[in-house]
Image (cartoon, rainbow, N blue to C red; front, side, top):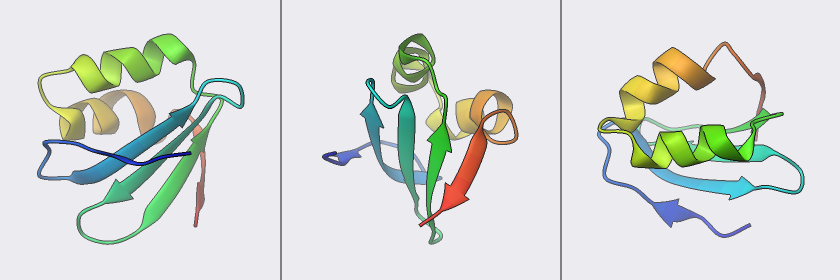
Length: 69
Protein backbone atom coordinates (compact mmCIF):
# COMPACT_ATOMS: atom_id res chain seq x y z
CA UNK A 1 0.00 0.00 0.00
CA UNK A 2 1.16 3.56 -0.67
CA UNK A 3 0.36 6.29 1.82
CA UNK A 4 -1.44 9.39 0.58
CA UNK A 5 -0.88 12.62 2.55
CA UNK A 6 -4.12 14.41 3.39
CA UNK A 7 -5.09 17.92 4.48
CA UNK A 8 -6.23 17.22 8.04
CA UNK A 9 -5.23 18.41 11.50
CA UNK A 10 -5.90 14.91 12.87
CA UNK A 11 -4.67 12.59 10.10
CA UNK A 12 -1.30 12.79 8.36
CA UNK A 13 -1.81 10.13 5.70
CA UNK A 14 -4.16 7.38 4.51
CA UNK A 15 -3.98 4.30 2.41
CA UNK A 16 -6.69 1.91 1.31
CA UNK A 17 -6.56 -1.60 -0.08
CA UNK A 18 -9.90 -2.32 -1.80
CA UNK A 19 -9.16 -6.02 -2.19
CA UNK A 20 -8.48 -6.53 1.52
CA UNK A 21 -10.90 -3.74 2.54
CA UNK A 22 -8.30 -2.28 4.89
CA UNK A 23 -7.79 1.39 5.67
CA UNK A 24 -4.39 2.41 7.06
CA UNK A 25 -4.34 5.71 8.93
CA UNK A 26 -1.29 7.62 10.17
CA UNK A 27 -2.37 10.05 12.89
CA UNK A 28 -0.54 13.33 13.42
CA UNK A 29 -0.27 12.80 17.19
CA UNK A 30 1.38 9.45 16.62
CA UNK A 31 0.12 6.01 15.97
CA UNK A 32 -0.67 4.06 12.87
CA UNK A 33 -3.89 2.07 12.78
CA UNK A 34 -5.43 -0.33 10.30
CA UNK A 35 -9.22 -0.52 10.09
CA UNK A 36 -10.60 -3.80 8.76
CA UNK A 37 -13.71 -4.42 6.66
CA UNK A 38 -13.99 -0.87 5.34
CA UNK A 39 -16.03 -0.88 2.11
CA UNK A 40 -14.71 1.05 -0.91
CA UNK A 41 -17.67 3.45 -0.76
CA UNK A 42 -16.79 4.33 2.85
CA UNK A 43 -13.21 5.16 1.83
CA UNK A 44 -14.46 7.36 -1.04
CA UNK A 45 -16.76 9.25 1.36
CA UNK A 46 -13.86 9.70 3.79
CA UNK A 47 -11.48 11.27 1.27
CA UNK A 48 -14.25 13.49 -0.17
CA UNK A 49 -15.47 14.67 3.23
CA UNK A 50 -15.03 18.27 4.29
CA UNK A 51 -13.24 17.13 7.44
CA UNK A 52 -11.33 13.87 7.47
CA UNK A 53 -10.91 14.01 11.25
CA UNK A 54 -14.63 14.48 11.88
CA UNK A 55 -15.49 11.73 9.42
CA UNK A 56 -13.01 9.39 11.12
CA UNK A 57 -14.56 10.07 14.55
CA UNK A 58 -18.14 9.69 13.33
CA UNK A 59 -17.93 6.88 10.80
CA UNK A 60 -14.71 4.86 11.19
CA UNK A 61 -13.28 4.88 14.74
CA UNK A 62 -15.27 2.49 16.89
CA UNK A 63 -17.23 1.25 13.88
CA UNK A 64 -14.64 -0.95 12.17
CA UNK A 65 -12.29 -3.39 13.85
CA UNK A 66 -8.90 -1.77 14.29
CA UNK A 67 -5.36 -2.88 14.98
CA UNK A 68 -2.40 -0.72 15.90
CA UNK A 69 0.80 -1.08 13.88
